[in-house]
Length: 339
Image (tube, rainbow, N blue to C red; front, side, top):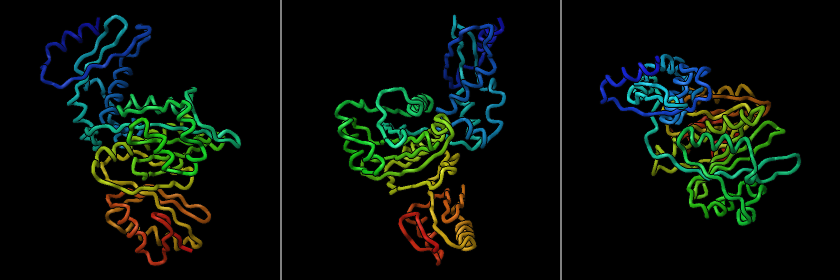
């Protein structure tokens, strides 16, 4: 009765407000949590509008989804379906006020190859059930980013092997992917026994970025990977026509690249080998002194360190900034030695 009354009231509201209708299947109406369902619908709409997972939005704006019912024009039941009519303009305003950018450009499409380390073997993942792939495909729907799996037929099996993936043969990956006509390629190398995962994001021109993520189970590793892929998808869709030569390698399992709340040009991962920790601290001070760079995360190990930078600078300019520290010896882009 309450739901029906609210629908009638909603009809009296101004109709100029932009709205979006969501439908939720209801198994048992007597056990259905209306308040929680409304909040989940608002969260789902916000994730699709921004490409940012809910935990990252909450960490940035803890009260973002409080009083979610204020973002609803109307709601009610139709047989076994709960219908929610969202105030889209109100949700967009709340996101912008929280400093979370909307993702209004075209979403890129990804082809997903996957391999898994099982003991001493590395095997391609075909069409069999796989938790990582399932979570990626769910994220495709969740964030509105098209993703497709290869057929894994005889042609695919002959075209690409785990050895070529782990050997980072970009030509082999792009040649195998060409039959699908999808510009962006995500390759996953899961290592369940090590509780870690390697990933590669390839472009059709052979350039790629790679990284390593950690997680005690497949769901945790998948969450980390989805965050990385969404950040990357936003960066390439928001920077059409801008080329970046990228080969990010995240050294160490505790550093993860998370989606950024601001629309920045890049997030670079710097690796430094060192002998003297004091000299390393001086390098970190040198980087922090730059107005155009923010240190997002730092992991220091016995003989090397990883520094994740958020910056508007290009790869080349970032490389120059780090190299300006006199004791640094250049090894390769974003990899240095202080020995």
